[in-house]
Length: 601
Ligand SMILES: Nc1nc2c(ncn2[C@@H]2O[C@H](COP(=O)(O)OP(=O)(O)OP(=O)(O)O)[C@@H](O)[C@H]2O)c(=O)[nH]1
Image (cartoon, rainbow, N blue to C red):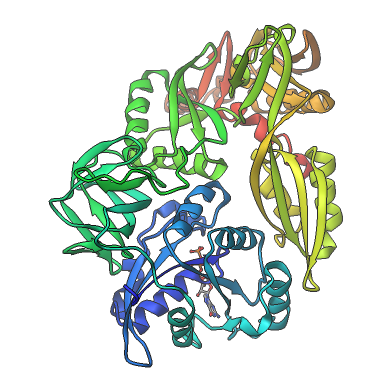
């Protein structure tokens, strides 16, 4: 087993992870250069379009060292987005070492630091690597200072490469052999394997990505998934070369996949342990957690009759997305739908896009929310993630909201604007600042999660001209002074539009919300008042003036087909509207809350 090395690559988006993997595949001759791109990059369209990799395949290559010894190197991917922190953690539990890859033109970013700390917690051996040294604007010395200051690795240990041109990549492979410890574990022990990812395949069911710590697993074996005690018979095991290639077995130290007729990914969750059904181990691998959603939103079919279709689509999505949770819900305004939980806003967008692309479903999503903990006057504690279901003010004793530790890395010139954004606009409190090299500062804040789930990322990028990067972690619930702001359209409450706001901001938020709604809801034949109500009082009001014009008036004298077209167009538009009382509310209005910051940008 001493000739196996298992590693992950920690890198910020675009710092060159894929390019480095490609080069390694090429150098080790795992794949013909001509075939490489299409084969390796088989991730989802959405990921490509947004320029992020949520997760790609692990890789297994064989490398003959300069001394002539043959090694198996397994490279596991770590997703580069804060929504998927738990998956990063589990991927790290599957390996013994990490390559910390930093772009010489961009320097160290927040996510890179967070993931490096995580690697240190897992006791991984870290090899720091500066990439893109071929570029004329590479700032190698400054990047070295940043790595030294932020991570505490001396600069003479930092390796330099150009993943694009291949410079230093072979030396990097030698460094991996030299520095990364071989996996420990014993083939003759009982089977103990960690699930670090799972994908759903239409034809083959769930494909589990595993790291075997002890024992051997092969086709025909009966395995058990530890947390739910379900047993399955293994039909295939294999390695990622990079395409899935069946092997006779997977042994202690190996990374590979198992197929065992599992029907949905939620039965084989990331972090769970696989053991033998005949001779199970007693204690599972540490670190398994049920994934908990951070952000919730209501999801309703664009047309009410499509409820059943939406239910089926969500069921299918859930087959390969174990982090998605949903339960049936009903809103007086929007009818039957679902309350869905997501890991974060990126995850929410991915789900929404997949519904559109893969199932041709248009959905109405309400503004995302965090989950509040409420202590009622009678002492009961409840968790609420839907503002519409907030108890009456008179029943509430105390409200607690989730807080996060937010770290932002930025060039010093943007400190003022960022502090203003976090402290003045988002109720954040600064905890510390620290210099990293000469050109970067790390700012640490504590902020309510609710304040960053909306448009924080975009605002941060805007005020820092794209230079700041962020990362956050959940730190617990804190008592807070919050109120529900309900919205009435034409005197009727529209539950799906209600929001939770801090008391100090309720007036401003309510004002902006009613104004935005007045912009987004089209004029009708009558005047429509839009009111915001909090603590039993109307705190803001806006009015949509009555429409006097007849739509067909402008067609006067025109031919009948033109009139028909116009009416047809109106009908199309109506599909995306919801009738609340006598008022048609377009889908955008339900996300008005997300857009009230638009004019400040
Ligand atoms: N000049 C130069 N460009 C590089 C080098 N390495 C990567 N690049 C370029 O940097 C860009 C991003 O590289 P990727 O390998 O896609 O980065 P990544 O980290 O995999 O990005 P994500 O998968 O989106 O997280 C691409 O345009 C690469 O061609 C290098 O050593 N030199």
